[in-house]
Length: 79
Image (tube, rainbow, N blue to C red; front, side):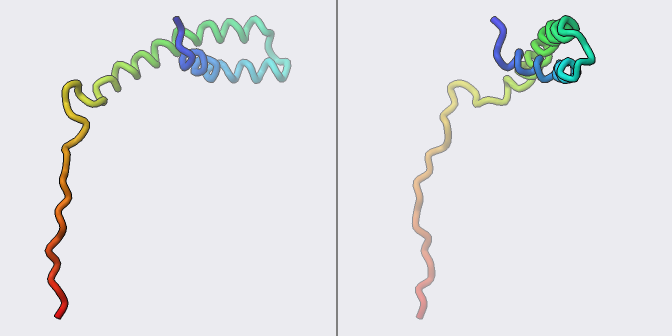
C-alpha cells in the first residue's frame, strides 16, 4: 500500500507540470505521466529517509528518563 506521504511528495514533485496544465501549456496526459513517474521516485526517497532516521529513536528496553528527586538548596540565612 502506498503511504499518503509518498503521494503528497509525488504531487509536490509534479506540481510544476500541474501548474503548466493550469496555464494550458501541457496536456493532462503529460501531467499524469509525470505524476506516475514521481510516485516510485518519492517512495524511494522517503524510504531512504526513513532508513537513515530509524536509529534516532529511543532504544528499546531503556527507561524514558532518569527519575530525579528534588532536594531543597541550603541557602545562607540573611543576618
